[in-house]
Image (cartoon, rainbow, N blue to C red):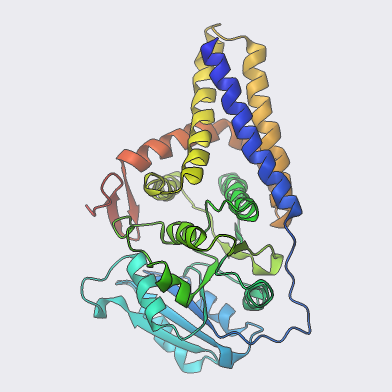
Length: 384
């Protein structure tokens, strides 16, 4: 009975978390820059890259096609010791670009390496008031910058988180990732709307340059290889409550590609999970604990149901409850991300999601992962 009570309480806790965010998402107003809006904010787009020769030109071309005054825009590509043609391609693009583009070599800075260092150098070199960030393998629409500028002008936030989705999802595995990733974007956006920011994505965010300096940048989190986005989100929220906003705009969606193999997918999720133990916010830690706990108990319920130690109706009710809550929330998020047609992939996703969460959580604490050609231990964040 104690075990069943724990399962029931964890499901109620989980349902409350998801349903409260479902309601917050529905109440989150959409942001659309009117045609008459005249941008006046100087922007700097910072792109930390490492070995992105296959992708970087597509992103730079997207930025060159932005509906934003060229005199108010600069692009900084900060190269983190690439050993492919990334720097050369950026230099070549600069010759014919209508946009101010600079390529900064992180190798010119003593003992600087890794994404946090690339972001740090980009912030130091930026001339813009508002700094926007994305990754070298991403694509952006022509209204991306105007959408950020309009929200910044009208609401004056210090930190803005934007939506990210996958494109070119051709296989069932990639489409399952799209649905799972949509839930992360939705939870992050809805939590910000509730005044309890917990997650964002470094492929699409912005913050003021002076605010980065005022909260101390990445001080205190330097040892964690990833998490430059979320650690700063938590810092800004703690220092300036109410100044973090989510940009709910279809024109601001940044697109990237899903992982092609199971191994690379697990590596990415382990990297993300490795930063959880470093979170300082109790609110954020409790949400992570709830997700882990409900998935652990549902996983343990499988052998109990098979051995007859748990009534089958209880087992099915528990799984159907979680499925119904997830479905209700994801229907809203996938609709916003224009991916509603893939919602039915939630069915096979439910079968693998529980062991996936458990494995990545454990490896995030006591494993290792490969990132951009570097192997990092999660328990001490040291390179191998």
